[in-house]
Length: 369
Ligand code: F6R
Image (tube, rainbow, N blue to C red; front, side):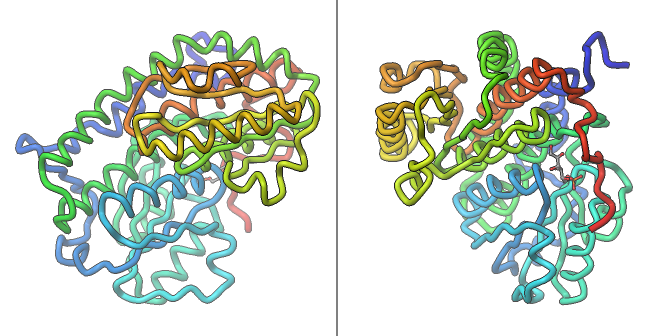
């Protein structure tokens, strides 16, 4: 049942190219237009939306943080992202023109379900991005976009995360199409690039052996930091979460730009710091700023693990370990950059003798608040 793998988590990591392809399947019509049939909101209702609030927990929340960049950039809609457990205990300003997007693999997470109910009571519409068909959240929402990742058994979310990202990209592009913020050609161009991502994820998986070796060499460490910028920031948060839950290690993700506002004080001789570097062909300033961050932390003794696009030579002098990922458009980079971090956490936890499918104190679906 584990398909020859020692753990479900390894199987699910390996299934990611197929899972991403499955999420894309059948969602583009012969005319090149996106057809998200299950999104039972009329085009007029979508045009009336003035604000999106994305609500989720854990890894799904990280997918939401990435979705924000896509929704704002492509669909031109203001977007907030909030943890479900925080959302329902404040007084969010919700109107009929607010679309609440909830993201949940299981569709049963109690905090997220309560957020759905709260939003609907305020007459906002709720669109759920779910993996499990017919789950409570998908039934109680106004509309649902399924991720089609297949069953995810390991407690730590991997393929569900990648497919949530794809579903969110499709959703953002669909809003852009309906609202006319992008031309058909622009949308098709991105869909084409998305269609290439399963092969790129396969490429990453084929080259992760050095990541495994690195993970084993760090098994005795007490703490690992993760830095990123733009969509690399949620990737850093996700890398840290995986390490916490699987390896029971202290791990933190930071926005690289925040370093000098505090976290740089943590940098000590030999501290491993994983840095997710944006593509140099995207916004150059983002790339260059992070390269100087890497220089800064290295000068203070950090052991730098740099995740950078193939051909990005600017990072080479400052990387103690360099992990290459294939070039993809900036907004899509999380699809390739997260994979080595999943492998890293899984291997490091295994090296410490932990059961990665059943981390201590955790349940696959959190049905209590
Ligand atoms: C982390 C993880 C959890 C879940 C969170 C939300 O690997 O699995 O953080 O992402 O409990 O679960 P869902 O997506 O089912 O609502």
